Amino acid sequence: MKRTLMLICSTLCLLFMVMQGAAMAKTVKIGFILKTLQEERYQRDKAAFIAKAESLGAKVYFDSANNDEQAQLMKFENMLAKGCQVIVLQPVNTGTAGTMVKTANEEGVKVIGYDSMLANGPLDYMVMQDSWAVGKLQGEAMLKWFKEKKGKIQGKVALIMGQPGDSNAQAMSSGALEIIQQYPELELVAQQSHEGWSSDKAMATAENVLTKYDNKVDAFICNNSGMARGVISALDGQGLADIDRVFVAGSDADLVNIQYVAQGKQAVEIWKKIEPLAETAAEMAVQIANKQDITVDMHINNGFVDVPTVVTPIVPVNRENLDATIIAEGFYTKEQVYGN
Image (tube, rainbow, N blue to C red; front, side, top):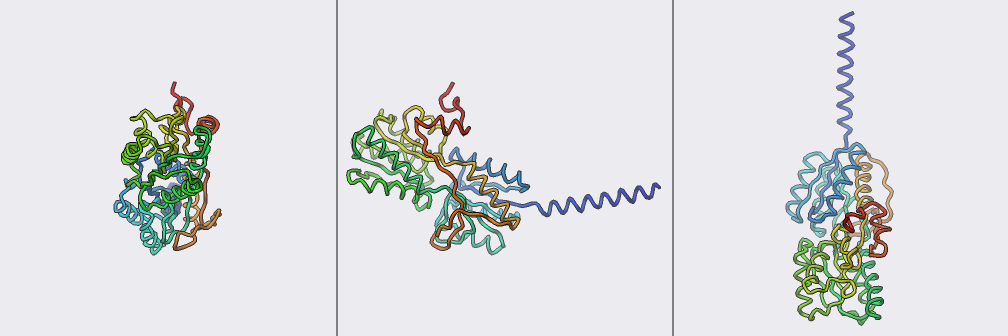
């Protein structure tokens, strides 16, 4: 009897070990690498992606590159070494990131582009917001502001762009420029890129433009929240941070910028909804690793290949709709935005 019990226990232990090993073997390994955590929003991207992927049974290897191309390359290679089956990549340099994708593909690893479409290189899938539409929405909000505050669409506009050569910065700027160029009486007095999407460099650009034009600049369209904050700092220094005097548009919906919208310092902030973006990317990564079919919205040619792409929502936020969008959907609380 004792012998039989020992045999049963031994068999059960062996079976448990086999099942455990099989479960471990089936665990999906996903890499997620952002270009930076510099902006507040990227903490949300990270948290939402990891939570969704882990809920689907995946193990996530996360890293960010501090806007350093070489650092990102090393971190990407480290994810390959760890056996990631799919890597979700937001490239620092959209012009050269195709080399990383090629290396991954040679090892049988799929790569999903995240947020910023790499150019002229291989890419398996893409999940993004429509960056061109972000710039267009900023431009349209500016036109409305000119009509309401100036009575006509006429004045000086500065375009504050992100990382030189970045496909997102180029797309957002292109959307804004299409609006600006439709109106001959809008004078584009600056169109400046900024390394690392730097808020400080954007502030310096705004200060220089304000000095050059004796503070008579009507509008600043900025590719992201951080650079919009830099512009507002420059305007604050001249007593001009007021939507009745100067139009400022940003994008990403960092809390400080939403507070600026509530305070009347910033006219509009484009809310690029983060949870749908991050969660969709996580779901796609797990599906691809499990060799499941992916449903996409469109194919976008990046100069090298038609990339199967999923597009997630964007919303312009101003003082009028702030409560009905950002607060109603729980992105920030009323206390966070307005204070106690």
